[in-house]
Length: 105
Image 1 (cartoon, rainbow, N blue to C red):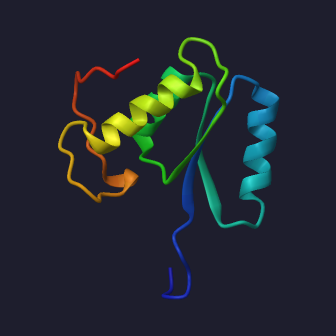
Image 2: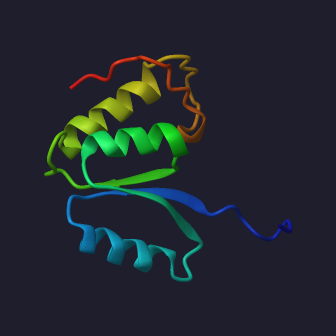
């Protein structure tokens, strides 16, 4: 990678409609310099993928089974701001997800 190339933004899409997820992923990746690293079918899966991949951005549907998008977003914010090993000002990619730590919601 040269100095003029940038690292693509890493994105997770969370939506319970697989056709919508795949279409949005294709749209985002085509010539945009974005990388969809995972697609989640519900909020719990979105949290797991965030722990695993440390995305720059999460596109979250609010109405999903198991854990809705609002609960999942609250949990992500909690981990990013008050969760384990928090250092103010750190980016989402560097959040440490403590083993066995329970999420609110």
